[in-house]
Amino acid sequence: MTRRKLIAGNWKMNGDLAALAELDGIAAAAAANPGVDVAIAAPATLIAAAAGRGPDLAIGAQDVHAADKGAHTGCISAAMIREAGARFSIVGHSERRADQHESDAEVKAKAETLHRYGLNAILCVGETLEQRDAGQAKAVVTGQLAGSLPDGAGAAWLSVAYEPVWAIGTGRTPTVADVAAMHGAIRAKLRALIGEEADAVRLLYGGSVTGDNAMDLLGAGDVDGALVGGASLTAAKFVPIITAAAIIPA
Ligand code: PEP
Image (cartoon, rainbow, N blue to C red; front, side):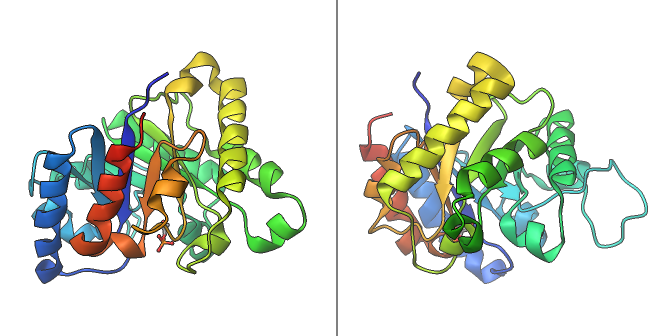
């Protein structure tokens, strides 16, 4: 099964209109590497300005509300991000699971809403260091996957990002063997949940990916791309990850 590589950046609560200049270099790298899908999850305030920076660069959101509309002060709907130009959203990022106490059920509902609005989803799962040290990493991650996988999950619109919480923003990464083992476990769980469709779903690794470690991490078994935080904020740091993905055979 051939799966196109996806390199997605997550700007989190960073960036302003001036920072959008970085997207020009990223869009140029996307155009120069047609075998790789490139995306940036922008802060909600920048989606409209960022969308359309280049046809090969998909702009998305970092979160979305599960409801269509209504009394949810401070939240943003799928229709709103779509109208602003988003093509996808991240759901279930560990920072939201921790800071906003998002449950698996909420994450699942958000992903299903994205699908109803014709938007793609990047669904994040990952264990804490405590859970890894206790030997619970696989059980936690596959449990999150089972709980937050949307009904009707399909490879055309859903990717899964494995992001060990302890590797996010820390400069620490799991070994390549650990990443391959976890991605294998995620793939197996997906097969149990959605059958053959699982083989087409892209599995991204996220957590301190840089231009220096991208070749190794992207080359691990069952890794179909990366979700990148800090190193996605500038073209100088993000483009080497895109070019690494282009070199690795699908
Ligand atoms: C992330 O937050 O999704 C992430 C992977 O961050 P970083 O690359 O900075 O570790």
